Amino acid sequence: MDRFKEIAIEVSLFSRGDQYRFLDELFSHLSQQRRMELAEHSMHLTMPRSRWMEIEDWMERRIVRKYDMTPNQLAGICMNYMKIDRKMRPLLVKLARRVKDRVRKRNQKGGSLGGK
Image (cartoon, rainbow, N blue to C red; front, side, top):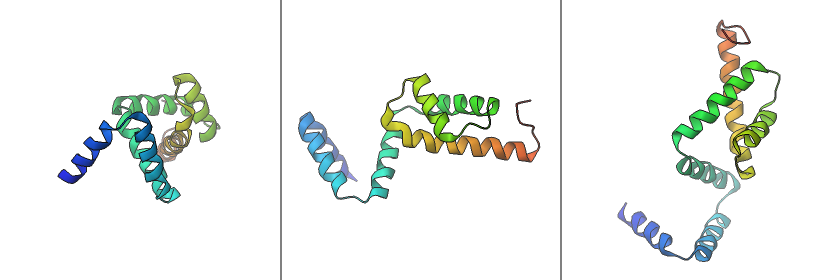
């Protein structure tokens, strides 16, 4: 594990341009699926857990009020409302799908749509 720490420290000491070139080279050797996994993991590392919970709670409140909204629409509204970078759209759509599925399952279990 020390080897990875040393590599990380070396990369952190690169200039910004060299860091970008390093990332370009790294991602060029990965499959599309692996790139998406690493991008998602990076997003979770850069945004605190509390922020993700805030976004998820907001989405859930919104979907309960207007269940016919698609996850894509919900992600777009969320990005505008919370001033989130457009590059995070795929991740937010994925989160919106999970939130909508959770609300759907809760409603099937016995709750009625539209809250308590």
